[in-house]
Amino acid sequence: MDTNPTPDEARQALRDVDRRRTQTATATGRSRWAWIAAGVLIAAYGVLTDQKPQFVRTWGVGFVVLLLLVAAVGNTRRGGALMRRPVRPRIAPDQASILWLALVLVLVIGATTVAAAMNVPHVAVWSGLAVGVLLAVAGPWWQRRVLTRALSR
Image (cartoon, rainbow, N blue to C red; front, side):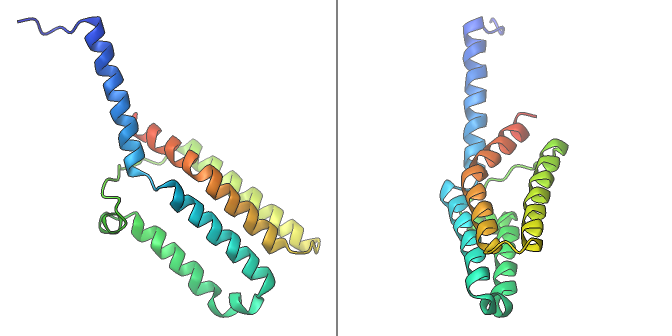
């Protein structure tokens, strides 16, 4: 009985492993619609902050806390199952990813602060739209990148 695979069998096995790794990364992530919905909610919050400041004073903090709670619960085992995401890999923090994320956050917050200090009109609308579009467009790409890197380790 020969236990050594042929080169073709080895190539096929490696392709199969790579395909399954990609399938697992796809299954563990949030759907594209969830990213788009999150971007729309952030953009809407920016518009509401600019157009209806009394809404933000009364309901704004509760709205943000609710969204953060949904995001936190979605990353737990039971919350993920509730949101139909029962599979979730353990992801070790990647220093480069954390640094890039921190850089983007510092740039957005810094630009918003500078624009507000310069009395640029509708800063909340523009920053909400920028973050919302960035989240809707780059969120799925970032998630796929992080998950495939985590699963390839």
